[in-house]
Length: 153
Image: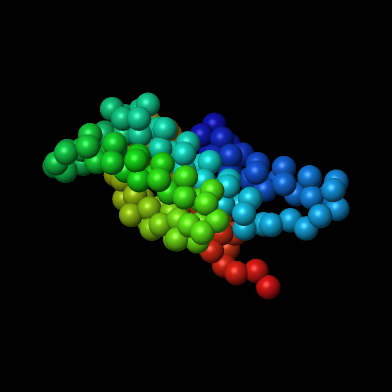
């Protein structure tokens, strides 16, 4: 549950801080920019997990999958690249689209881990963890789309 709070805090903090500053300075707020920054920080956070908790993340993948450790490291590098790209204005839209794709493609690993009660990041709670994880994934996808991709009028 603490991971959920950390992710939501990371995601929303840049936008919240920018909102407060924009109100104090009475200047317009660039929602897309700071929403992308929050998502970017979240992706950097996610990528760190691939380096720090690589062994546990390997357990999130089925044993029949070859090169599981390499997959963990490569997906960590991919998440880091997306996270960095979310800070670069010209790349933000594409990076947010990739973020959505990552959330969708990686979700089966979360299902596998929850069903098999992998002892990492809440998955040890078993399938009940999906009651938290699935809505979080949907929230992250919605954030990426509505806050980072969709054009504001």
